[in-house]
Length: 261
Image 1 (cartoon, rainbow, N blue to C red):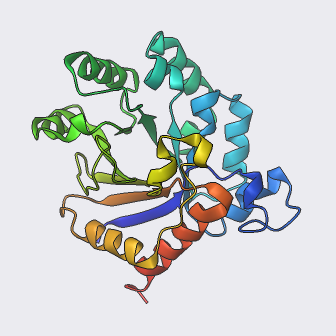
Image 2 (cartoon, rainbow, N blue to C red):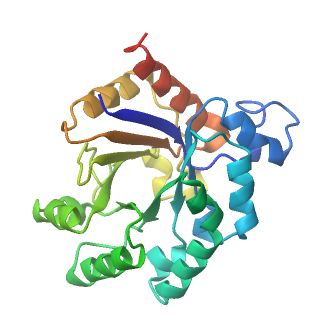
Protein backbone atom coordinates (compact mmCIF):
# COMPACT_ATOMS: atom_id res chain seq x y z
CA UNK A 1 0.00 0.00 0.00
CA UNK A 2 1.16 3.54 -0.70
CA UNK A 3 1.35 6.15 2.05
CA UNK A 4 -2.18 7.42 2.69
CA UNK A 5 -2.73 11.01 3.81
CA UNK A 6 -6.26 12.07 4.73
CA UNK A 7 -7.50 15.55 5.57
CA UNK A 8 -9.97 18.28 4.65
CA UNK A 9 -10.10 21.18 2.21
CA UNK A 10 -9.61 23.98 4.69
CA UNK A 11 -10.00 23.75 8.46
CA UNK A 12 -11.09 27.17 9.73
CA UNK A 13 -14.90 27.13 9.62
CA UNK A 14 -17.15 28.70 12.28
CA UNK A 15 -19.85 26.05 11.79
CA UNK A 16 -17.35 23.31 12.74
CA UNK A 17 -17.50 24.54 16.33
CA UNK A 18 -19.59 21.92 18.03
CA UNK A 19 -19.56 19.22 15.32
CA UNK A 20 -15.74 19.02 15.31
CA UNK A 21 -14.11 21.79 17.33
CA UNK A 22 -15.04 22.43 20.95
CA UNK A 23 -17.82 24.95 21.47
CA UNK A 24 -16.30 28.37 22.04
CA UNK A 25 -12.96 27.47 20.43
CA UNK A 26 -11.02 30.51 19.27
CA UNK A 27 -9.91 30.73 15.65
CA UNK A 28 -6.26 30.38 16.61
CA UNK A 29 -7.02 27.11 18.38
CA UNK A 30 -8.52 25.40 15.34
CA UNK A 31 -5.39 24.21 13.55
CA UNK A 32 -3.72 22.69 16.66
CA UNK A 33 -6.95 20.79 17.37
CA UNK A 34 -7.25 19.73 13.72
CA UNK A 35 -3.66 18.46 13.75
CA UNK A 36 -4.43 16.09 16.62
CA UNK A 37 -6.69 14.18 14.21
CA UNK A 38 -5.12 14.66 10.76
CA UNK A 39 -1.62 14.84 9.28
CA UNK A 40 -2.32 17.10 6.28
CA UNK A 41 -4.56 19.92 5.08
CA UNK A 42 -5.42 21.80 1.94
CA UNK A 43 -5.02 25.54 2.36
CA UNK A 44 -7.81 27.16 0.35
CA UNK A 45 -7.70 30.74 1.64
CA UNK A 46 -5.03 31.42 -0.99
CA UNK A 47 -7.65 30.98 -3.70
CA UNK A 48 -9.36 34.17 -2.46
CA UNK A 49 -6.40 36.17 -1.20
CA UNK A 50 -2.70 35.59 -0.61
CA UNK A 51 -1.91 36.08 3.08
CA UNK A 52 1.29 37.52 4.51
CA UNK A 53 4.16 35.10 5.06
CA UNK A 54 3.60 35.30 8.81
CA UNK A 55 0.30 33.43 8.37
CA UNK A 56 2.09 30.43 6.89
CA UNK A 57 4.80 30.66 9.53
CA UNK A 58 2.07 30.45 12.17
CA UNK A 59 0.64 27.33 10.50
CA UNK A 60 4.06 25.70 10.71
CA UNK A 61 4.44 26.62 14.37
CA UNK A 62 1.02 25.18 15.26
CA UNK A 63 1.70 21.76 13.72
CA UNK A 64 4.44 19.19 14.13
CA UNK A 65 7.10 18.26 11.61
CA UNK A 66 5.06 15.35 10.22
CA UNK A 67 2.17 17.59 9.16
CA UNK A 68 1.94 18.37 5.43
CA UNK A 69 0.30 21.18 3.47
CA UNK A 70 -1.08 21.48 -0.06
CA UNK A 71 -1.78 25.09 -1.06
CA UNK A 72 -4.34 26.19 -3.64
CA UNK A 73 -3.22 28.79 -6.18
CA UNK A 74 -5.12 32.06 -6.48
CA UNK A 75 -8.22 32.34 -8.68
CA UNK A 76 -6.31 34.84 -10.82
CA UNK A 77 -4.39 31.82 -12.12
CA UNK A 78 -7.27 29.42 -12.62
CA UNK A 79 -10.38 31.49 -13.27
CA UNK A 80 -9.31 34.89 -14.60
CA UNK A 81 -6.17 33.46 -16.22
CA UNK A 82 -4.51 36.83 -16.77
CA UNK A 83 -1.26 38.18 -15.30
CA UNK A 84 -0.66 34.85 -13.63
CA UNK A 85 3.07 35.50 -13.30
CA UNK A 86 2.52 38.23 -10.71
CA UNK A 87 0.04 36.08 -8.80
CA UNK A 88 2.38 33.11 -8.60
CA UNK A 89 5.32 35.31 -7.61
CA UNK A 90 3.25 36.78 -4.78
CA UNK A 91 2.20 33.33 -3.63
CA UNK A 92 5.74 31.96 -3.59
CA UNK A 93 6.94 34.98 -1.62
CA UNK A 94 4.32 34.35 1.05
CA UNK A 95 4.95 30.61 1.07
CA UNK A 96 8.67 30.99 1.78
CA UNK A 97 8.42 29.97 5.48
CA UNK A 98 6.40 26.88 4.59
CA UNK A 99 8.71 25.99 1.74
CA UNK A 100 11.78 26.37 3.96
CA UNK A 101 10.21 24.10 6.57
CA UNK A 102 9.95 21.28 4.04
CA UNK A 103 6.26 20.82 4.74
CA UNK A 104 4.85 22.43 1.60
CA UNK A 105 4.14 19.32 -0.47
CA UNK A 106 2.49 20.78 -3.52
CA UNK A 107 0.22 23.30 -5.20
CA UNK A 108 -3.39 22.73 -6.19
CA UNK A 109 -4.90 24.44 -9.24
CA UNK A 110 -8.69 24.07 -9.28
CA UNK A 111 -10.05 25.12 -12.65
CA UNK A 112 -13.71 26.01 -13.24
CA UNK A 113 -16.30 24.16 -15.31
CA UNK A 114 -15.71 26.68 -18.12
CA UNK A 115 -12.07 25.56 -18.47
CA UNK A 116 -12.57 22.91 -21.14
CA UNK A 117 -10.03 20.74 -22.91
CA UNK A 118 -8.65 22.84 -25.76
CA UNK A 119 -5.33 23.84 -27.26
CA UNK A 120 -5.49 27.18 -25.43
CA UNK A 121 -6.23 25.46 -22.11
CA UNK A 122 -3.34 23.04 -22.51
CA UNK A 123 -1.06 25.96 -23.38
CA UNK A 124 -2.13 27.62 -20.12
CA UNK A 125 -1.24 24.46 -18.19
CA UNK A 126 2.18 24.34 -19.81
CA UNK A 127 2.81 27.94 -18.78
CA UNK A 128 1.63 27.30 -15.22
CA UNK A 129 3.84 24.23 -14.96
CA UNK A 130 6.85 26.37 -15.89
CA UNK A 131 5.92 28.95 -13.25
CA UNK A 132 5.64 26.33 -10.52
CA UNK A 133 9.15 25.09 -11.29
CA UNK A 134 9.94 21.84 -9.47
CA UNK A 135 7.09 22.05 -6.97
CA UNK A 136 4.51 19.26 -7.31
CA UNK A 137 1.48 20.60 -9.16
CA UNK A 138 -1.96 18.98 -8.91
CA UNK A 139 -4.71 20.06 -11.27
CA UNK A 140 -8.45 19.63 -10.79
CA UNK A 141 -10.76 19.93 -13.77
CA UNK A 142 -14.52 20.29 -13.52
CA UNK A 143 -15.53 19.66 -17.17
CA UNK A 144 -15.72 16.12 -18.53
CA UNK A 145 -13.98 17.07 -21.79
CA UNK A 146 -10.71 16.42 -19.95
CA UNK A 147 -11.61 12.74 -19.67
CA UNK A 148 -12.61 12.27 -23.32
CA UNK A 149 -9.27 10.97 -24.65
CA UNK A 150 -6.42 9.00 -23.11
CA UNK A 151 -3.91 11.41 -24.64
CA UNK A 152 -4.79 13.93 -21.92
CA UNK A 153 -3.32 11.67 -19.27
CA UNK A 154 -0.17 11.20 -21.36
CA UNK A 155 0.09 14.98 -21.67
CA UNK A 156 -0.20 15.42 -17.89
CA UNK A 157 2.39 12.71 -17.29
CA UNK A 158 4.79 14.40 -19.67
CA UNK A 159 4.25 17.74 -17.92
CA UNK A 160 4.65 16.14 -14.45
CA UNK A 161 1.19 17.35 -13.45
CA UNK A 162 -0.79 15.31 -10.95
CA UNK A 163 -4.36 14.53 -11.96
CA UNK A 164 -6.99 15.23 -9.30
CA UNK A 165 -9.82 12.72 -9.16
CA UNK A 166 -13.10 14.19 -7.99
CA UNK A 167 -16.11 12.71 -6.32
CA UNK A 168 -19.11 14.85 -7.14
CA UNK A 169 -22.74 14.60 -8.21
CA UNK A 170 -23.53 12.46 -11.28
CA UNK A 171 -24.53 15.36 -13.52
CA UNK A 172 -23.98 15.83 -17.28
CA UNK A 173 -20.50 17.02 -18.27
CA UNK A 174 -19.07 16.83 -14.77
CA UNK A 175 -16.13 14.51 -14.25
CA UNK A 176 -17.00 10.88 -13.59
CA UNK A 177 -15.64 9.05 -10.58
CA UNK A 178 -12.11 7.83 -11.37
CA UNK A 179 -8.93 6.61 -9.73
CA UNK A 180 -6.58 7.93 -12.43
CA UNK A 181 -2.92 8.72 -11.75
CA UNK A 182 -0.40 10.72 -13.76
CA UNK A 183 2.44 10.96 -11.22
CA UNK A 184 3.59 8.80 -8.32
CA UNK A 185 1.26 10.80 -6.05
CA UNK A 186 -2.47 10.20 -6.41
CA UNK A 187 -5.03 12.79 -5.37
CA UNK A 188 -8.77 12.67 -4.66
CA UNK A 189 -11.10 15.50 -3.64
CA UNK A 190 -14.54 14.72 -2.22
CA UNK A 191 -17.12 17.41 -2.97
CA UNK A 192 -20.28 15.49 -2.08
CA UNK A 193 -22.97 14.25 -4.44
CA UNK A 194 -25.60 16.90 -3.92
CA UNK A 195 -27.14 17.05 -7.41
CA UNK A 196 -30.05 19.29 -6.39
CA UNK A 197 -27.92 22.20 -5.18
CA UNK A 198 -24.82 21.89 -7.39
CA UNK A 199 -26.05 24.37 -9.98
CA UNK A 200 -28.69 26.08 -7.84
CA UNK A 201 -27.42 27.85 -4.73
CA UNK A 202 -30.97 28.95 -3.90
CA UNK A 203 -31.74 25.35 -2.94
CA UNK A 204 -28.83 25.15 -0.52
CA UNK A 205 -25.08 24.62 -0.16
CA UNK A 206 -23.67 22.40 -2.90
CA UNK A 207 -21.17 20.98 -0.37
CA UNK A 208 -23.85 20.01 2.16
CA UNK A 209 -23.41 16.25 1.89
CA UNK A 210 -22.41 13.41 4.17
CA UNK A 211 -20.89 10.30 2.57
CA UNK A 212 -22.16 6.93 3.69
CA UNK A 213 -19.85 4.23 5.02
CA UNK A 214 -20.56 2.19 1.90
CA UNK A 215 -19.50 5.06 -0.39
CA UNK A 216 -16.27 5.54 1.53
CA UNK A 217 -15.56 1.80 1.43
CA UNK A 218 -15.96 1.85 -2.35
CA UNK A 219 -13.34 4.58 -2.54
CA UNK A 220 -11.02 2.61 -0.32
CA UNK A 221 -11.20 -0.20 -2.87
CA UNK A 222 -10.48 2.29 -5.66
CA UNK A 223 -7.39 3.53 -3.85
CA UNK A 224 -6.18 -0.02 -3.27
CA UNK A 225 -6.57 -0.67 -7.01
CA UNK A 226 -4.21 2.15 -8.00
CA UNK A 227 -0.98 1.18 -9.82
CA UNK A 228 2.02 -0.01 -7.82
CA UNK A 229 3.91 3.04 -9.11
CA UNK A 230 1.83 5.22 -6.75
CA UNK A 231 3.78 5.87 -3.56
CA UNK A 232 1.47 8.38 -1.87
CA UNK A 233 -2.25 9.18 -1.94
CA UNK A 234 -3.90 12.39 -0.73
CA UNK A 235 -7.61 12.19 0.13
CA UNK A 236 -9.17 15.57 0.90
CA UNK A 237 -12.80 16.13 1.84
CA UNK A 238 -14.40 19.35 0.63
CA UNK A 239 -17.96 18.68 1.84
CA UNK A 240 -17.24 21.26 4.49
CA UNK A 241 -20.79 22.19 5.52
CA UNK A 242 -21.25 21.89 9.30
CA UNK A 243 -18.16 19.73 9.84
CA UNK A 244 -19.20 16.90 7.52
CA UNK A 245 -15.78 16.89 5.84
CA UNK A 246 -14.06 16.21 9.15
CA UNK A 247 -16.56 13.49 10.03
CA UNK A 248 -16.04 11.68 6.71
CA UNK A 249 -12.26 12.15 6.83
CA UNK A 250 -12.18 10.50 10.27
CA UNK A 251 -14.32 7.65 8.94
CA UNK A 252 -11.95 7.17 6.02
CA UNK A 253 -8.97 7.13 8.39
CA UNK A 254 -10.65 4.38 10.38
CA UNK A 255 -11.25 2.31 7.24
CA UNK A 256 -7.57 2.36 6.31
CA UNK A 257 -6.36 1.88 9.87
CA UNK A 258 -8.40 -1.33 10.13
CA UNK A 259 -6.00 -2.90 7.63
CA UNK A 260 -3.01 -2.24 9.88
CA UNK A 261 -4.58 -3.03 13.24
